[in-house]
Length: 350
Ligand code: SF4
Ligand code: SF4
Image 1 (tube, rainbow, N blue to C red):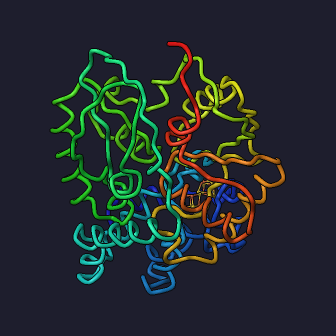
Image 2: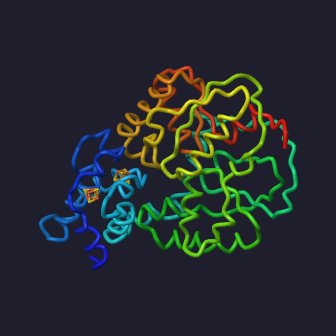
């Protein structure tokens, strides 16, 4: 094992602060599902008291890659990176194939079919919106899930369509750093053609902001185009918002402000708004029970608040919300925030 990796693993002081924030631990209540327990198992590997077997692999996979443990950790240990490095180190040729871009594209294709028939996102009833010219060359970052599921993104400004690659996160967390680097390089090359790249998926936005040497001024979140606009909903809504794990606090507060200022929208902050929805990319396909516990809890919080609409800004979070609503038989609607703004809100003053 690489010296730096060993140093990071043994850095864990076993304080247990990660237990308060880890969504998987909240659902499973087992020491092996939280960073502290995972590091203890990895420490066993370093000391050669344990072997990298199915059980350790399974426990490392029990992670939503939300990054919450790192934020809570006094030693700032980047658990997501460590788990990815371990997966990379012990990956068999078959796992390498399973984590290839070919298989990934197939998974996205299946996701698209499932989404279309079971949890349609509703972008088909788009209204035409008046678009201003910002004078800038803007492109929409249509990453993998966005491209397949939410492919009719709009903002009230003119922008170009460009075929970007996946942001790379799905490969990074699996330890396929080679594919992550390839996609990152291709995206950075395409970014050069534009003044601004607009993102709607919170996870892609966060990942791209993490590229080394990225020109951060170029990377904008779609909600920036709605700031300081006077808006009115086409009918009254009681709205709340699920904060995706990768949406930063600054953007979350801006979204709250936008929603609070729309005439006809009664916005209320969701209890535990920051708790993970449980779907974490394709986590739910392997750990459906854990994902369901978290998804249902999220919807119960929406029901208790009395909102009739729950919004979010990540395609898999949206899927989780729709899944939780169906599971609970709740009379709530879930929308992507961009869809909600386009379909139910009018800009009344520029
Ligand atoms: S918060 Fe950090 S140092 Fe504390 S137990 Fe968790 S991973 Fe270890
Ligand atoms: S990244 Fe999230 S799910 Fe994974 S161990 Fe840390 S807190 Fe738990």
